[in-house]
Length: 279
Image (cartoon, rainbow, N blue to C red):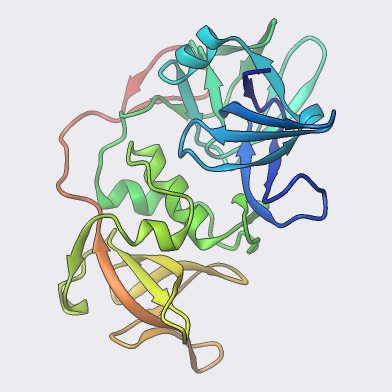
């Protein structure tokens, strides 16, 4: 196998070829990858197509695709916009989550291996949602109350960097997987008073290393993951949680990823509509 695709709802990517190894990130349904190395009959070292993340997956949890399919699926797909939605074929029903990819999607059906599967939820083609803070707010707040999970990328478990990456990915901005990598992108904002909705705030440990990120919202609020996806207060010192009456994270820096609003229609494939419609 040289290239593969995720045929399950969520598949773990681990730091090493062991079920006991750290969960680093996850493959979502329909995401593709390149195989870099094999270990025995059970493990594949892969590079994720979307963000170039490298880790180990179990061979029996993924399936091969051809080099031509790998290239085609980079452009010909739609993102699932439902938190959870079933896909169906004559033989099975599989739940997929927000951000899953529907390859060769025509508005009602898509292809996986030799099967044609049906999807009746909400989906959006890449680079069609407005690249603005309103889109980020809509996408990111869908995850409110989702439980925290280090390495997670689904509504059943997600971390702060995964929440940021998924939200920005849907509007066409691909950020790295980890907060300490994401902090290298965008324009530096010198003062918190200059921050705008959609900016990213990064937080540091006592040793100075960035370990946490959140999305700035209006009225001095920040959406981040601490126990669950939640909204808290943000000031020049960091995140203040009113429930505990304490600061939980110390602010390091603010970065602006969104450069400007791009005027274009939002095209969403809605339930039971087999075409793109402008909202």
